[in-house]
Image 1 (cartoon, rainbow, N blue to C red):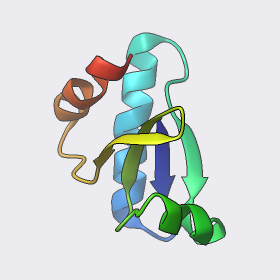
Image 2: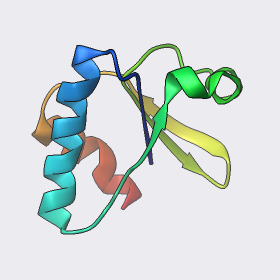
Image 3: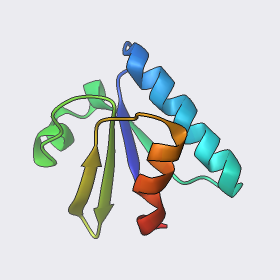
Image 4: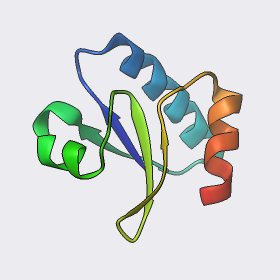
Length: 83
């Protein structure tokens, strides 16, 4: 699972805090990070429409893109099937 963000995005900072909380619950890293500004080709390849985005892939195939980081419980429900 890749957290796609922009360093200038306030919503991205809030989303990161939610993901950090989930990693603390599991006591291990769950997410990699990618600065959208530095990887425009990947943004286009995966058709990422906005940031923040949690891009969930398996063997290069997009399984899900999560744009609405509503709450920690919401994000927990989104990621649990992929853990």
